Image (cartoon, rainbow, N blue to C red; front, top):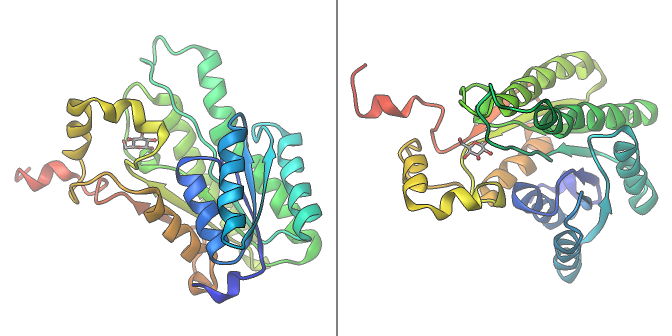
Length: 261
Ligand code: BGC
C-alpha cells in the first residue's frame, strides 16, 4: 500500500480490459478514486466498476474516444465532477494491427496513431492544464512498449507511435519538472491480455514469443499494474522522464543467451 495515493483521483484510458483494467483495480486497492475510460466495451468497464465497488472502492466508467480532444475533456470533467479533482492520468489506451508496411493503408496507420500517439498528447495536455491551473504536483504515466526500441516488422505504425510516446514522455517530463509534475513511461513486453489472445491461442506463436523472454513466461497485467502504482506513488518522488521496461528481460537481446555473438 502506498498511503499517499489514498483519496487521490486517477483517470485510466483504455481501462476496461487488459493492462488498463489491472491498473484501475490496483489503484482502487490503493484507495484512489478511478475514472475507467472505455471506447466500446461498456460491459467490461461496468464489470470493473462493480468489482471495485464491491471492495468498497470508488470508480466510474466513462465512454470517450481518447483520440479526440473532446474525449480527453470528457474524462477530465468526469474526474472533477465525480471525485472533485485529478492527480494522476494514465495514458494506457492503445491498439495494434499487423500489416506489411508496403500494404499498410493510410487509414490503418492513422487509426493507430490517433489512439497511441494523439491520445497520449491529448490526455497529457488535458491533465497538464488541470495540474497547472490548480497548482497540483500531479503525475502522468504513459504506456509504450518494448517496441519503443525493438523494431517490429509489420507493425511499423505501432513502433512509430510507441517510439514517439517514449520521447514525448522525456520531453514533457523536462518541460514540467520545475512544476513538480512527474511524467514517466512504462514499456511492457508480452503480457497476457486480449491484445495478444488470438496470437497466443496458437502454440507455435506462443512458443516463439516465449523464446524471446529470458524469464520464460508471458507477463501478467498485475505485474505491470504494480509498477504503475509504484511510479505514481511518492515512493518514486524523484523519478521523472524514465522508461521502465516490464518485460521479463525481452529487451536484453535474448538471443545472446544461446550464442557468443
Ligand atoms: C505488443 C504485444 C507483443 C509484445 C512483445 C507489445 O507491445 O502489444 O502484442 O507481444 O509487445 O512483442
